[in-house]
Image (cartoon, rainbow, N blue to C red):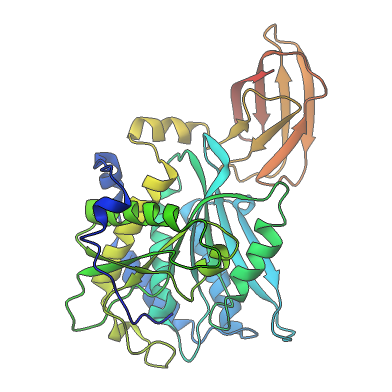
Length: 396
């Protein structure tokens, strides 16, 4: 991505959105757990993986590194998916990596937090290791915090060759889902590492200004204004307002999704070269960007606002049964349970077993037909070798 024009946001802030966002102390306490050590260590590790182009071992090694990071954060294998594709006549198989965190109120509506992990001309430590490490810190800190909306943390490949990874994902997954995937917002993070030796105190927030289509431009402006507010509430950075351009969110934009994004205001001169290295970046700035992203993701996903709610969420291993009330089908979200074999039983209020299913090799979400069970309240039990989760459900 290349930016050559910025717009001051000061005179449009009120016109874009008239309400003010509240500072939420719990969100700030989570943002305060963002680690400068993690940012710098992960940038160093990403840089050491080398040039990440299609068909290279470095690209696959970076994918493996990312998977290991998410697993270490507590995400399970069932929450992590690989999306494979080829492009431009090359036989090389590339992969997007998707980590899904299921929402507690709107499980079928998604906040997408994305950035690309491939590079061109060099290691790509700023473009886009800086975005990746910001996403990693956000995923780490939100792993055990309930959010009303589902979140997909997506690491795209193929961006540098023409947004091929995100184009494939939108075509094959977003539009290939029945019904089509419901996306509340796409937040793209691309090149947010700053420039060594400069005063990197401003972050560019990007809105949709495109004409093809333009349907969601107004909503993108509203969301971007909220993003600007989040940067001010949860980081020390100032903001500039600019336009969305030439990064993975454009694949979603052309699909008529609502987009916003983050980009460095002091733009590196080292992108796409072998000097795109940590030594030419400002890791403290990258750390502050990550703080802004954490606060914004909590805001847009409507995260819990207290440790009490988070504790209750963890006690049930993030498992949920939805919708409730249910009609013909009940969905089981396996949450953070690592086992992929379990039994699912429904009891009536007299303790009589009315339905039982044995699930082998479980996906993150399993759908259970309710087989015409009468309208009533029931007790649903998910049982593994080590876990027993019990919740009340309603069938209407």
